[in-house]
Length: 284
Image (cartoon, rainbow, N blue to C red; front, side, top):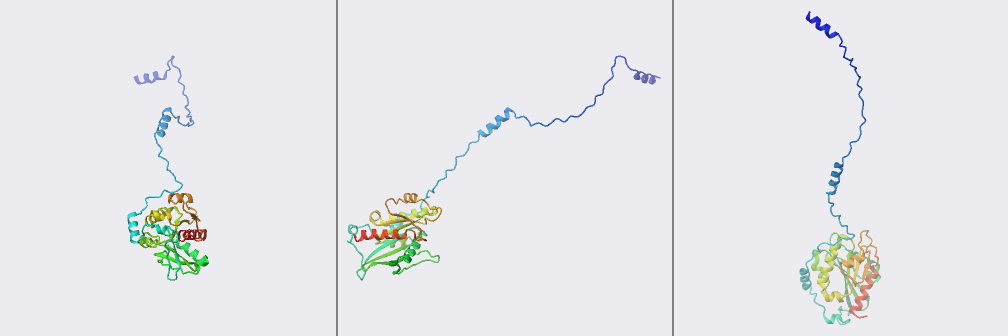
């Protein structure tokens, strides 16, 4: 009976109770928004980049700076002594005082092409030999290796007249032939220094001109007729003429921009050294 009463009491509504409303819950989709960037994040970002110190920008040089030249002046001076290249005497400075004559009484004037290996010395001599009538009458003597590079010297006598002969030599430019190269300088009356215009060969040019200065000595470098050929001017990376003259310290010498493979300026250059040698040696 007690159970019945409890059930009956639950079914009766109390007068002060209000009915409970059941509300349906509808899920709404909130559109996504970009997260706000806090001021702190901005500060951290700015601080992050400001702490990066940029490195020094690389300096791009228009022209290369020559590296240390592998050259021993002591060895060169010793080779010059062995070749009997002595200091210039007073008699040698006087034109016509000291002349070299052959058995026929002809005066010989010695011209030497000097410069680093593969600068175009032999190419220039071959062009002159093939295109100048007086040279073609002579005999071109070449001593070369299997690659066609001069191993001792190239020689061609040029008969200027019945009483005068120009003996033209080119020397081997490789470092290992320094002894034979310096021997050819003995008793020379004029020099054509042929430099390679490419940046890669600038150190070889410097070593060659320094070797020439040491071998000849200050007095002969100052008085001997010397012309300069800056060869391979047709190459796209050829260094400027003024830059090469300055780097090689060749101010004051006649300079010719040449292309030995085409013969450009070779005749003018050759005529200049012949003329200067005649004036120096004979005085005409």
